Image (cartoon, rainbow, N blue to C red; front, side):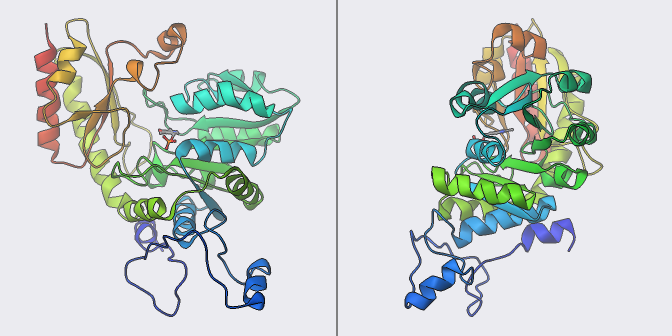
Length: 378
Ligand SMILES: *Cc1c(COP(=O)(O)O)cnc(C)c1O
């Protein structure tokens, strides 16, 4: 099956006798057994489901669907993108281990790595992944993994995944990539040799701003451990949330195609606007397009608050990736906790605005943003 077919036709677990066209929601905490032999069949691996925290057809569908699209053998669904990060890390790291992570991680991931992993006895160094020599220098005798994001937030740097994979192989390290911004439609890190790939399904996998979820996929040995962590730490996803994410996933291809077309056009137009100092939109993500996020820096002639006040139907939010266009202000939300000097180093300035380009008519999106930039001019 081709990618566009797989996104629609990924598996529907259970009910082989009564295949429904739409997948039912198995909104149940547990599954019933006929007798003790039937129960033992679960522990012999002949039956799939016992208790929803341990497994459920809807959560399994989501995990299997994303794994198939990433070209990975196995996946695990989690309660959020952040619990997917935790499950990925705990699938290989234990007390005394060290991870080298990229310095411009998603804010929530940075908080988890900088402040929570220490209580598990796991140490993290943050380095500039644009320079793989710096990454190599940060490797210690107890380093277990290299952790990065395929396309970074909010400046949309495209990671050199092949370079990371070969560095990881050279030092016998595990490579982990957060593929949330790129989605498997544009980049498939597992197929490039990455061991573990994860998603905040809250973003493009779900795609409709109505579900918080995560997925980890990758090599079987790590997925077994990731599944144990999700079960034992209670980081499972609920059936309804999984069902919503699956419903979103089925339209991933057509959404990403439109998102990327609209984003490309918007980036081109904003480039020439008075008041716009710089536009960030990558050009090397994939031949299918370059993603759906455009960031721009408004110059000193603009009043940024006036920009946000003048957006009309475009909402200001602290997220991205819905079918509707939205904007966010990184310095006040995702990067609020990042120290000022790091923000300066990363070029996250008071003029920086991140636009999550939706699937509406591109002309309407362009007018709304042009008009807001114009209104912000002092
Ligand atoms: C949103 C996001 C996360 C965290 O996901 P949640 O679903 O909010 O827990 C992790 N990584 C990236 C790149 C994200 O955009």
